Length: 220
DNA sequence: GCGACAG
DNA sequence: ATCTTGTCGC
Image 1 (tube, rainbow, N blue to C red):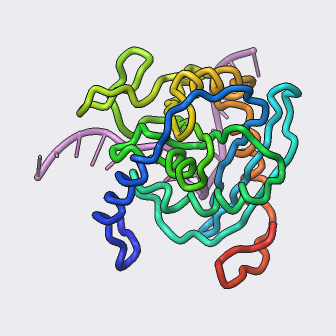
Image 2: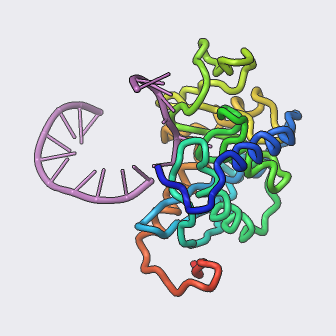
């Protein structure tokens, strides 16, 4: 797996370990607006979507999106270097104030404790939860995911229709994360906000790409 | 060297 | 993630 020329993977790991120290685990209460974010790809173009979902009303309230040129390949443990910016761009389009973001990927259940959801949460100083469809790191012990090196609980298994690997991203506790994901599992194997974001991202992908600016971003 | 490996 | 036909089941 080739990374861009000049990319220092050792430096990247140091950055991840450093940012991981800023992850905070605090209880989240009065969760009313939950955002779901996801990215779809077509060639070297990323189509990202952010959806604000109202828990009380059980429906989406607002959508944010962004179309960007891909700048980094998919490399296990370095997913945020590929998807973080596109997701941030889509999130910034949202006007509604939200309580937490659900991310398609790991939170702290990562070899350097900084999966995509944790990186996003720390970078923006917001509450986030990692919801992955498969495991990246850790040992399954019953319904919990444990760090094989420290024995620390780094996540939990939540059965929607299929098992989901849930972990803290930032500013939430694992219990909060698990309860929130559970309560939002409706018709799909993914919590509603993520399903909506996934569908919106794929819908964007179907449209014709516009003109990219000097930052590699196009209107959407 | 071997196996594992989010999207 | 994406590529990609048919096929099994409700």
